[in-house]
Amino acid sequence: MPRSTSQRSNRQVRSVGRGREIMLARSPQAETIFQDSIPLRERLIVALDVATVEKARAIVEELGDAVQFYKIGMQLQFAGGLQFAEELINSYKKKVFLDSKLLDIGQTISGAVENIAKMGVTFLTIHGNGKTIKSAVAASRGTNLKILTVTVLTHLDAHDLMDLYGDIPIDVEGLVRRRAIQAFEAGADGVIASGQEASMIREIAGNAIAIVTPGIRPDGSEINDQARVTTPREAIAAGADYLVVGRPILQAPDRKGMVEKIFSEISEGLGERRAA
Amino acid sequence: MVSTLGDAVAFYKIGYQLAFVGGLNLVESLRRAHKQVFLDFNLHDTGEEVARGVEGVAQLDATCLTVHAYPQTMKAAVDARGASALKILAVTVLTSYNDADLAAAGYEMTVADLAAERAAQARDIGVDGIVCSPEEAARLRAIVGPDMLLVTPGIRPAGAEAGDQKRIMTPAEAIAAGADYLVVGRPILRAADPKAAAEAIVQEIAAARRPRGA
Image (cartoon, rainbow over the protein chains, first blue to last red):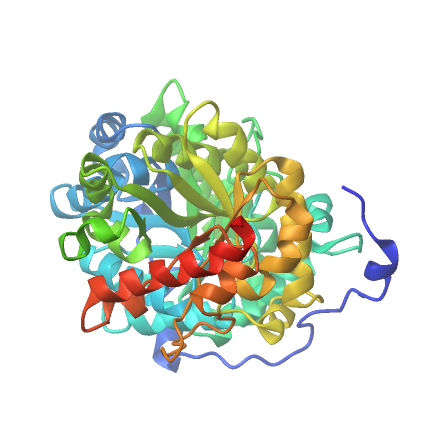
């Protein structure tokens, strides 16, 4: 598409958020919620990236007690996944992360968040700016639902961001930093961030927020469409609290074996973090 | 509400709020009642996730689906729609956002410029239409040409409250500016007589269309 360079040249990259004090919109007691107190078995969230509820149910049955936390994304959500989320919560006693990535005007977000909280969902993702996040946080108050915000989708790299923001050099880290600060100031419970960004976010926000990391590939697996990936050990050592893993488990010949391999990598990462 | 409005309304939008309380099942019953359905899910995720979401929605037999107007998201949605009848609409900039909100998100552009840039990207990628504020409809119509659909929320009949929408217009103004479809919620849902409110808006649209159609 033709671009007008003169129109763009007056836009500059700003150093975003560096050295800025952030005000966390939550109580000091909240500061110990995450990090060490999370049971090991809840640190792995298995993404049910399959087309039908039948396939999802078979995976949940197969993994049994080894997995306590499941993510339902775009695909399953529109194919009976919302009812299956309630089945996971009520019948299987699992925790559910609904990865709906909501982005809409405040009033619409509030209505959706209230209904999702009633379902008993644990984590919900939203996109958007400070006001969107505040609407979601306000609507979730008094419920067990935690609001996670998406900083920058893990498949985007600096080149894609130039497509979005124009022909100016954008550093992914700076944008993630800015979005993370905005999320914390608005009171979000956590952020979705790549393993590469976890330590930077931990440095900004301390222990008051959860860092949930997709784009995890155990040693030796394929990268697929995720541009910014880390291994489970690296992500946890860098400060991630929860890891989201889909294909490396779903496509493994031995799914349970892969789950246990990931848990042992998580344990290693926790050891490194404590030693650091 | 659907039975209250009866024949006065042939096209419904289902958004997030209803989607999480059985709204997806409602799509089927609306289709059976020969209504068209616009699923306003504003999809935005990695290309692969968007593609899978669109495939799922295409099976629901809805008429339109919204995705956010990011190039990768739009490309994935258009490819995944394939030969199905589902129309992909791209949301340029949410109607509750103003220039200050964009600046806070890291965009050093005005709402109008960002909407224009995303509309041009949407046109180049081949999406079926765009969702935009009525204020931007005239400018975006010039960018996307006559064939793409322009769908505008943020419609408030004269005298209605703005709520949290920042960039609003009356039905007549929006149609005159080049909009094809108007999305109206609260002004009808909260009207003492929703059917009369819907009919009044349809008449306003008909009156506004006359000069263009003549």
